[in-house]
Image (tube, rainbow, N blue to C red):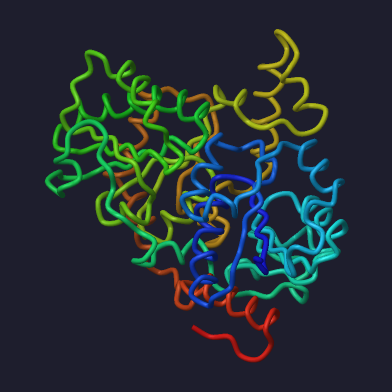
Length: 392
């Protein structure tokens, strides 16, 4: 019987938080299982990816919101686990599991401002301390995302299409493109980013362009990519499956969206530009009344675009490195964008002072001790379950 049940909701949490923690628990001999919570950001292949990390019988869900509530209502988890560990996501789910199962609930979060009430222990990366409103109730440790850079969790990229020389360090500069984990976002983002790459290739023929398809990519999507590149020469352009830690050292600048990727790029010490085109506002999850307007004919798309632009401009920053540093290390483009305008910005930023300043700011960040996040949390779990000193 597993002692620990991890509650995980999205692709970023599953791959970058649960995966390193599971390995650290395995090293301690602590058995774990994972429950895939409902998630608006889901890629649709969480179960297949989770089954590559855990044994098939150790993966539960995803069951959807009502299915999860029904699973809890039938008492399926009563007495099965001694400890629940929620990794990101809506804290309400963790509290529901705790109430129904009567187990202790721990939470690892990058937003220690909320979701603390009712949780037995809360953990966050040390750099979250200045962002926490109730720091006395949070235990600051390392970062599980940085734990993913451990050699045991990285593997060579899998080239699936294009020019393999991009992966061989033969280009003057390689731009990394991260089109996202969710297929709907990736489908729309790939077409946009391919056009950015085409414009850049015309202007800087010596550059390379690497499209990093996440571990949640399905090979069936290749037909869609081939359709996008039909009649499009792939010299200097490559598509590979993998994650940022596995691609480290192969690129000098990145184009990404808000999310866990920005942390991975920060730990790689590679400057990036963060895009959130308002044209893609229809792909964002819906929250509250104004988000619901997105479902209305004619008014929906406009309402959501206005909401996105107004709400996001109230936020000081979207990318984690910018929040951590207290300044804009990664430029954030939240506006109506065209491939040509993005390419123009990238060229002026990369070849001007902006890139050099970003690189210097990244080099000045101190990550010492943060790489032990997974092992530190696993050791705490071991102590709670077995008492005494649990160590690797």
